[in-house]
Amino acid sequence: MTVVTISSRFQVVIPKDVREKLDLKPGQLVDAIPYRGRIELIPVVPVQSMRGSLRGIDTSVPRDEDRV
Image 1 (cartoon, rainbow, N blue to C red):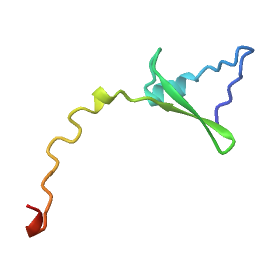
Image 2 (spheres, rainbow, N blue to C red):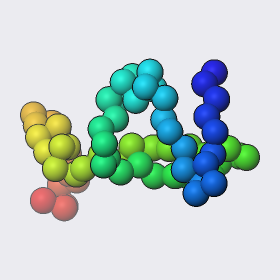
Image 3 (cartoon, rainbow, N blue to C red):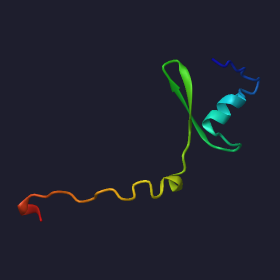
């Protein structure tokens, strides 16, 4: 477990090994969420990066005869 210190300005430094493991970049946004007595930092993924991720998905939906 890695321990960090909160500065007098309430800032923390994310350790290098954690930044590298999560591929965090300077200026990247993260959500800070209080959860069960701890703080979780969740990297924000831009919607544009999701484009094309569902390519090839089957969009056909079986319908009842009276709903066609």
